[in-house]
Length: 227
Ligand code: DX5
Ligand code: ZN
Picture (cartoon, rainbow, N blue to C red):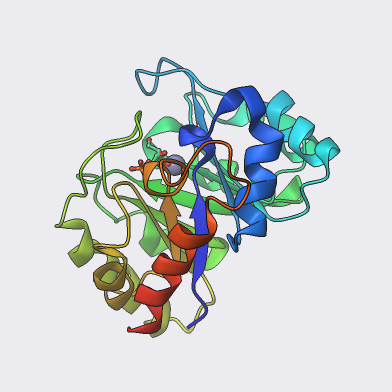
């Protein structure tokens, strides 16, 4: 299995975001996880397509994994596609027409994914999994960084991995919330291949050291090497 580390820029220093993203990618991260919050679907407000476009203009070429915590979803999808998003994931309960939203993401040239909150059932995957590039399991309730990992999500991960394998699909399984060196190995063993880590990564090291993310990314990879 190829493992990918996706630092969530929610915990980066927004006053120097371009530099933060450069540093974390230079330190070995694979994907930029981009949390979009609207103070409606979730009780917090973050960043939108302009910031995604600014990162592309800054020279970021790594995949940008846009996690939409917004309701409604469809209006903003073309804007993120134009802004250079690679993946666009959304919460099924935030869309009136899940299949249409998946199609819209695909038609816009991006890779669609569905996101499940810790208590959201997986039923819709029966009818959508073959149309997705990513399933994202929330291991905290969405809205904030720095929360504690909810362990029952490991059972969900095993279930989704089984579904992906049973259907012979190439869908990526990502987890988001409370992941760090202490639990990443256990999470990988449950079948996850892509790991969002916000506070664990951006909280590491001294602020003025451009290499400050090397050792945290290396320790995440060292744990993954034990799987
Ligand atoms: C929460 C966001 C996460 C968050 C994760 O709603 O979707 O991506 O940044 O942060 P940590 O890794 O600190 O739990
Ligand atoms: Zn996220």
